[in-house]
Length: 242
Image (cartoon, rainbow, N blue to C red):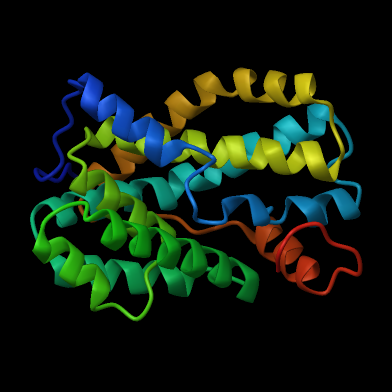
């Protein structure tokens, strides 16, 4: 239960053109982190006929967004605040905790590979100051929410807008995976994406509430995702990486 708000998180949205452009860059499917190669259990859900059409794909993604709002998105906000304040030890501790909560090998591989790719891009693009880049370079591995939060902090975006971009990029990638795996038409994919706009907003509100709790209210409970991800690791026919 959330007992008291933490004073550290204050969110004021004042997005200018430069910040908006940075957000669009980070949320773009063209960001070279390999997100397109993972389905986060969706391909296994298709294989067992849990996801079979547009409606069930939309329901799957909406449920996954609820899971994201309970742990990964509030963790993103906490990591963003710590990156901005140069609390690199806190970043490292929470990053290690998040990796340990990934229930299967493929989920750990996904967040580690995507995090490494984005961390490398931050170095190559020289985003942020020397202290931030040195802290990233010193880590043998980094998870994706931690790296994304570092990029957002380096580009000085608003944290609420940043976590919104993070959630939307996740939804968009799941939609693209559903279009390939179910399969669905492009119009069906866009209907799913548009239909989840409000859900992204609710996820951001929930993530903000959880991050502001003292201690932060992070929940990793998602047994169905863990089971399906484990099945996907040995699934005979796959489009997506495991």
